[in-house]
Structure formats: structure tokens, C-alpha cells
Length: 278
Image 1 (spheres, one colour):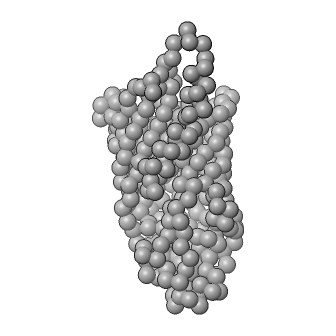
Image 2 (cartoon, helix red, strand yellow):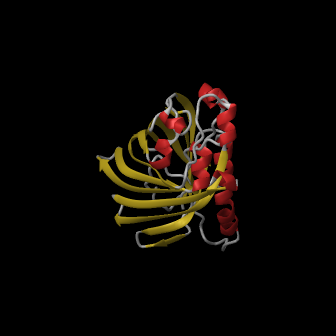
Image 3 (tube, one colour):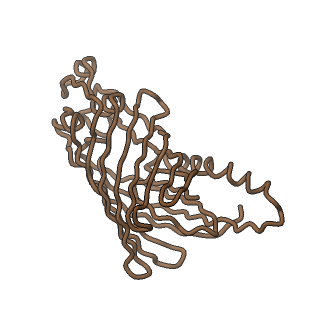
């Protein structure tokens, strides 16, 4: 079982709470098992880093943010492979190369203080979305196909689905490279919240005309990463994620008038693993 979190703050607290929420039922169940059966314990991986990218979706201006990282697995399980943009997941069902389970993500905010052009527009709060993921390994530990479908816990913030195909390649004993393609879709609620401008907002502000953003394809892109094992229990990962906004996301005045359809994020994360029996 594997739990990972790469998210901007509101931050480590939300990631830690969500991850411990996933693990608690499993731990409680293991505590009631036969006491004569040896408990292999857990491997906990903690880390943090920073990334530099758009301040909000469609923004041209960029900012730094903190990136917490958290992973749990049983000590008798091999460390699983994942991409830097995977959300918090938990495999409930596994059949051959197919894995299914719940997934939780954290959505970023948008505030007027981030860009003066946003004056008069609604602000977007940090929020949590939840749903399901499925991934399939046509080639074990090499080629992975993955989909995440997540609904925001505040219904007005909408639904998003992220599809990806990743290739993982080891170079010697210490380096792991990965590269993958991405496609993202969203419903009308998500698109209007992130890229739409109502008539009232257009009148309040002086920068954007009214615009109705409809559901459909939101972005295409790619993710690349390189992970180096500095010590047996310590890794450093560098990554780059590029998204090209498409459809109504690219046509939005927030993007056309001073924003950017090209969304590029670079990041670095340090992690360290240690055994524990909680």
C-alpha cells in the first residue's frame, strides 16, 4: 500500500491529515490480527522541497511554493513507482498489472493580491477534491497508464479528470528517470470557476469581458523527472511539468489578456525514509 502527497500549502497539515486518514483503518485492522504473526512494520518517507510555477491556472506571473512529500508502505512491500504529479492514492484492488482505489488531491487558490488584473473577479479558495484512480502496467515497472477522476468537495468547484502515460527507466543503481504525456478534462463548473467571467464581474472590474467557459478538454502536456539516490534512505528528485491550456481554458480572457496558455512548473524535492512500528 502506498500513500504519496505532492501539494502546495495549505499545506503540509492537509497532506498529513489526509494521508494519516488513509492509513488509520489499515493500521487498526492490523492491530486486531493474530498477535503471533510478526508485524513487518512500516517504512515512512518524509520530505519537502519547492517548486516554481504559475501563481494560478492561466497566470503569466510565477511564484515559489512549498512542496511537502509523504509516503507510507509496509516494510515487506517494494517501493512503488510514481510520477511527481500523482495525487494521494491508496490501492484497494490489484489484479495483475491493474490497480484501483481512492485518490485525494489539493487544489490551489487564486487571490486578487496575486495579480492586479483579478480585481472584481471571484477568488478561489484552497480546497480538497476526491475520487478514484486506476492505473495499468502494460510493462511491469516500465510503462504505466493512469487516470484520476476527482470531484471537489465543494460542488461549485467542479470535476476534473487527468489521464497520463509514463515511462520509467533506471540508470544504474541510483538514478530513476521518468517521462509522461498528460491530458486533462474538466466539467463546466470547474471551467467556469477557473476561467469564466460573469457579467457582474465584468462590470465590477475594468479588465476582462464576460466569458462563459464550458466543460471539455482543459490541457495537454508532459512531465519529466529524475530521482537520484543520495544515500540508501535519502533521495532528491528534480522535475518539470508543462501544460498547454486548450479549449475554453485557452480562449478565456484571463489567459488571452495578459495571462499565458503555456503553464510550466519546475520543482525539487528531498525525501528520507525510516522504519517504524508506530
